[in-house]
Length: 251
Image (cartoon, rainbow, N blue to C red; front, side):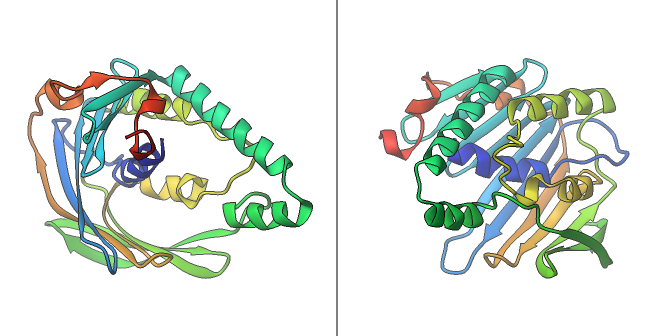
């Protein structure tokens, strides 16, 4: 589940809403963080289907079939769930967090809630700071402040749209249903905030600088081409397993 949430960040950062042809799109990007080897991510988009390929596995979201799929390359296994099944898993996870918080002393709970971003919603401010061309695409640059502190900068182009409006609607509905937020728990995540989503839904993010952890993610190549259906299916030879059998803790 942890790997799936990490890869969904790449999803939200690379959705597009600006006019373009609706063929398949392939976006290859690289994430660089001091002291770590660069991580390459390849995202595929085609009419309501999305696949993100990383060294840690593949995440597939198929709005046509209503499925979410995650692979484990080390064990050559995969798990899949419908939006309703995934939402139930997320809700169960939230319940475990709330039960754990209830078991803590008031002092420890206050500390943990602060670390997890539980409670009062911080102030998110978005401002346009310039323009730049990346990969031949004109981009607008934006800065995001969190409680008055600059935390992120993004380069967004509005020229690319991987899905038709109808497929886009189905896709977003699937994601929203599969990953519900618990208002009672109230965990703040910048990437899930309305301000962040409204900004990244305006176009395709070709570069992102996260000042919180000195991470830079930038697009290396972007091309439009027809993608084979197999790209949105589990790799051949992989065995289907329950979700709790994925991940390094089960190796």
